[in-house]
Image 1: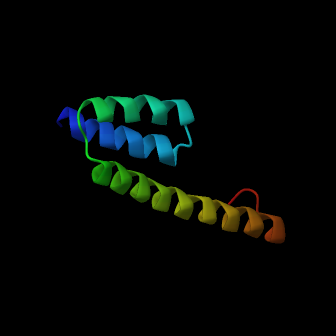
Image 2: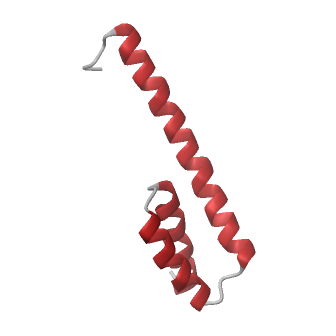
Amino acid sequence: MDDRTLELVAISASVAGHCQPCFVHHLGKARALDVSEEDLRKAISLATKISGVGDQRMTDFVENVLRTGEEGK
């Protein structure tokens, strides 16, 4: 994997993992590698969508456990 792609992956992981220092670090590295603003925004958008789905599924899970009392499943 080339360095530019690696930094885009790292940016996506930082956003999805809600790691602000990681995001700032990898954004700086990506900009130093001349990654385009368009590619940065695509990586961020994808991570936001993935993270949002995970957040919603966790919310649904928590509500189901609270409603049914099925903690072990």
